[in-house]
Image 1 (cartoon, rainbow, N blue to C red):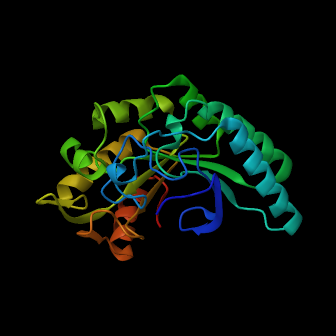
Image 2 (spheres, rainbow, N blue to C red):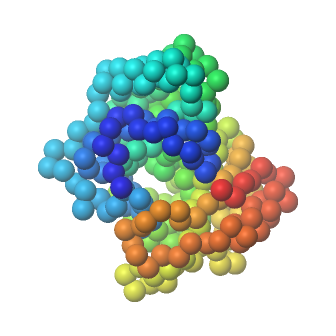
Length: 255
């Protein structure tokens, strides 16, 4: 499922309420430095265009202003403006400027709306990305496993990716972020994956306790996935995971 507009929705998000989506990435292809086996946008290779193109800062600002103005006149403003779309939003070269534009429009047209960014946290080494994420209400940063081998299977990251490096960057970012984890199980390329096992949970919970983020969100598959052999972790099990994090004194929700 690809988003074919810069602004999409509003949709009812399990995690965020009435969400107006913003897609900074190509409108007819996916552009991401992960290739998650559960991504609703499909595989990178299946959606790659010959000339990947970021949406321009001006086009994004104009589209968002037009949509918020109409929603304001209709009396149906969103709860949240969410950056997600067809890949990883923080790889946009003008990400910080776009966030500045969005906050200015939000303050003028929808002052009660929160600004959220769904990110895989791989760009935290960039000062402009850190600055931008500190400005938004909800920097929602992903860590699907605290074990490198599992993270590489689930997320299929490009380049040099290690959990240790991501955790270090999250630690330096500070505690004002939301940690998001997808729990799933199933088979991929002949390997069985389950990031709910005791070994996986203990490693992940140790990272959560070390980072102590503002909030943790745990969730599972809700839409079709490119890997067809994955299985959803049911809500009762997610709530048990969430309760163990709550016992550590950290806010956690199963969504």
